[in-house]
Length: 187
Image (cartoon, rainbow, N blue to C red; front, side, top):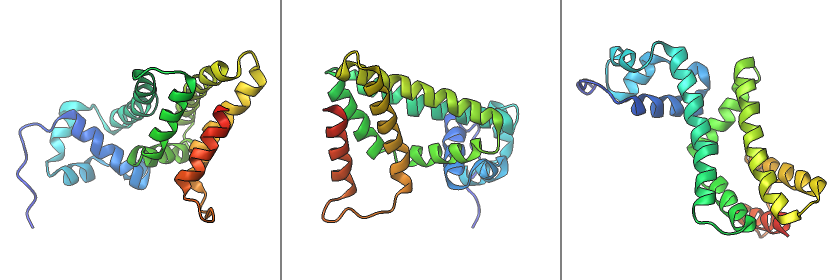
């Protein structure tokens, strides 16, 4: 089968999206210019219109991940207003539908174990997430900083850990259990 004819210039966003898919599927080693070009049905020469090198693409993948998993998520949680409880419910709903971006998040966590710069970036992103959660729980818990911190950490731990737990929940679905957790955290 012949690949599709190359377009004049593949948009930068398509390279980034393909890179994120490759990262989610196989980690940073799977993000290769030739493989991405093949997946996009273009020549690899078009890559260099947008990126100096593979490292520049990897940096942009981290930027795109941070925007999608922090900036965009917080913006959606804040967009329709409401109190901290309503925003928390929207965050948990977002987490339940994160799909491919969650796989990217998990791949970046694995990558961070082997790359100090990525570990620093992950720490910054996680701190931004925790700061937002703390702000919501401060609204719920008032001046009780210990309770706010504990609930923020529990909420974030559920977001990350949920994807590593394969346990059944009796007659309940995972979604039902997550809703129970949300209710307890916002009480």
